[in-house]
Image (cartoon, rainbow, N blue to C red; front, side, top):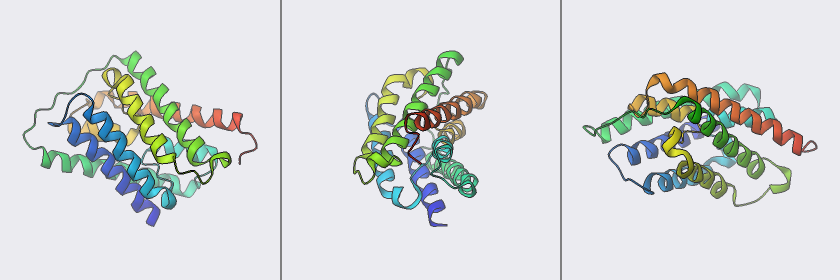
Length: 208
């Protein structure tokens, strides 16, 4: 039960940070830096308990890699989605009255951008937080958080830099993205994560 609580808390604060920095919040470099930092500290806080996925796509990748029990996959995803939903509710309360304009990404570029950087995120997670060769390192949180920051700067204006199906649900609830765009994130995020897991297993065949 403790690891499910940690997945809820980490995802809640990730989506809360996204919502508060994007809806009526800072502009320019502020949201990517705040979001990356928020994810980083939550990863440091939760990895020793749950693995600190905070992302259904990362859970898929870690499960495919063999470091997440099958019985935990559905509860992890449920807690991540619930955390995102409650965070969106909190943002609506805290930013009541703030103007929100949904983005309108071009489907092709958004799909590619989300797939590439979700792949990058899952690839980094698998290598810094699950690989035998990096066991015991203290850089995993920074590496994971900065991957999201880099992705936000690189493709934020193309896809919204979501890289996370629970975040996609959160921003849809907030009106930052139309529900009709949700499939883009689900398809690209899960495919990118699965590709990262397959490549990890190819590159590290003995790391089981």
